[in-house]
Length: 500
Image (cartoon, rainbow, N blue to C red; front, side, top):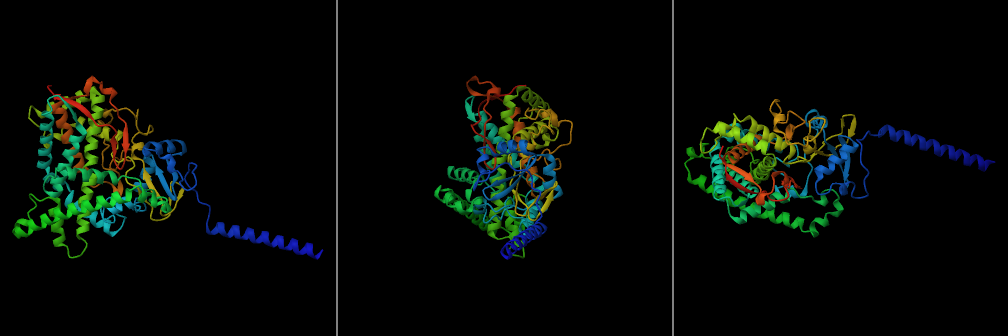
C-alpha cells in the first residue's frame, strides 16, 4: 500500500511539474502565428521547388498558399510576398525593419565585403554611399550632363545596324555593347571595347546572380568549392579589382597634372572624377579606394544588363505585336519631323513610347525577385509573426501579372498605361520594376532615359523582322534567370530602313 501511494504521488507530482513547465514555456514563448508554408524536405527545405525559373515557381506556390508565404531555403526562413498589398506592407509600412540585406557570399566577394549600395546591410555606411549616389552621381542634373554620351552612343549603334544591309544581326549583343559603352564613358571617361574587358564584365554580371548553396546550408559550403564557383568568383573579383586599380591610377595621374581650379569644374567630369574629388574633400577615412571601386561596380552591375535587357524585351514584344509597333512608329515619326535622329528633347512628348516601355517592364521585370531583404527585428506583418533575420523576397514579376490588379495580365497592351498615373518610382505597389522604399533603385532616371532614347531611335529608323520569314508571334520568349531576367535565345533579327 505504501509503495502504491509513493508511485501515485510521484506520478501526480511529475504530471503537475510537466503541466507547470508547459504553461511556463508557453508564457515565455507564445505560439507564433506564422504565414502559411508549403511542405518542406529535411535539410534542403523548399530549395527543390525553385527550379530554373524561381519567379515562376514562387508564383505557383503563392497562388496555392496565399500572397504571403514562409518557405525555407535550407536552414534559412524566407518570406515571399507576391501581391501589391504585401509589398506595400513590407516596402512602406515596415520599410525600416526590412531595409537590410542578407550577407551573400558571391556579392560579398565581388563588392569588397558588400561596400556598395545594392548589397550593403542597412546602417551608416549604406546611408552615406546612397547619399553620395543620389546627390552627387545620379541626380537629375548629373544625369542630364551625360546627355551627349547617350545620344552619341545611340547614333553609333544605329549606324552599326545600318551597315548590316539586311543581313541577320544579334540585336541583344549590339544593345549590350551600347549600354556597356554608355556606362564606361559616364563612369570611367572612355570606352573599353577589348574582348578581355567584355568577357570580364559578362562573367561579373553572371556570377553576381548565381546561387550559392553555402548561403543556405552552411555545412555544404564545400560544394561551392568543389564545383569551382568559389574559385571563379575570387578570380573575377581579382581581375576586376586590377582593372579598376589601373583606371584609378590613370585618373589620379591626370588630376595631378591638371590645374586645381580646372579640376573642380563639373563639365567633362566622369563619375570616377567626382568620387575622387569627394575623397579629397572628405575629412574622414570613409571615402577609401574600396568604397570608390564598389561604387563603380554598382554602376556596371545595375546599369549594363538591366538596361540592355529591358530594351531587348521591348523590341521582342513589338516584333510579336505589329499593331503596337506601327502605332509607336507613327508617334515617333510625327514628333521627329524628319530629323535624322530623335533627341532627348523629343522624348517627353512621346506618351505611347512611355506606355510601351512601362508595359514591357511589367511583363519582363528586369530583376524579377528584386534583391533579397532581411528583417532586423521581430515584427507583426499583416497578422503574422515574422522573426528577426528572416530573408524577404518580393516577387515583383508576379505582382506585375496579378489578375486582381491587371486586366488580362498576360497580354502585351501598352494602352493600359495611357490613362493612369502609374509610374516607375515605387509609389504604386502593383507596379515595382525598380523596387520601392529605402532600397529602391536610385538610378531609375538614368536607366529610363537610355531605354526611351534607344527604343525611340530603333523603331524610328528601322523595321525589324525575324530571319527565314518566321512570323513575329512565333518568336521564342523563353527566359533564363539570374539576377536579371534575360532572353534564353539571342534576338536575331533582320533590320531594314523604315519609311513611313
